[in-house]
Length: 400
Image 1 (tube, rainbow, N blue to C red):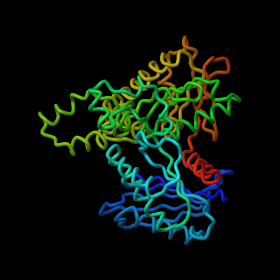
Image 2: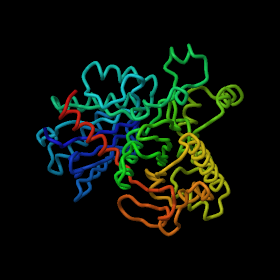
Image 3: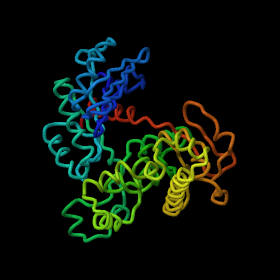
């Protein structure tokens, strides 16, 4: 079975894709389709490692975006229909209580993923379109769904249960599911390899800090808690999402500000978090504003750090003792100030950050704690595409 895998991550208005060898991790090509369905600004950037192709123009829907991306593959010498693709791996955001393992997609699985759109209305519909499109474009090639919620299927009942009417919760699948699971699992395993230990020997806290952000507590390789909940809105402050919020704010805004449900959803998903507080959601821009003395930008940063530290404290208590703290994703891997401020003043817990190591920019895993520190603090680059590719290749090579 060929280990060449096409990985697709279809968002509500974008598609990220990568063609790679699962075993060697060699990437043959990657790209991004952006602003799908918008009247202006549609763009596809395709990179084959030697040159970059750019397509600009309206992209009416995900199917059109994928067809154009396939054409860009052909322009750079790869015809996906004859290249020997062994599997297509799809990042699917929500598996509900039905799916947690990588799953070979058939008509029934696809129908269930579509039904689960009620739990992820911004994401699962796009995932379904991606699956339908590649079925048309690459007929006969096995397709595998890898679920963002899968790693957190193990959450203890007390951690996954919301304190609302139990019958209402059961009838409508209301519980904590967690997201970014592929990343949390991948970096926790890579950290264990780096330390020369098994995941079953370690208690780990992972901070996946990108535009979306989440943290997890992992005991012996099994997640026992995470910050995101039934939806990706709960938990840490994010680029455009607020994280934890008094639920009473929602009816208050609907009653007093006159917002309807769609406006509230837009506010919480697109215009909150760092952007809502400062006007920007890129941490580089936020840092520039802080350097210029912008007090709102500084407040946004302080709120962000406050929430990180609050969950760090909670997970230290949940785990009892911690061997490793991991930072990953765009902000986690690139913002030395965030890492330093999140862990400042915790020497008595055995948690320290070496200032010089923390400033280092280098490929691969980076240890930023002193050699003498009891808790290993690591920066571990995430690679969700590779994790999805390997899961898809393994399943297709060894079907259950």
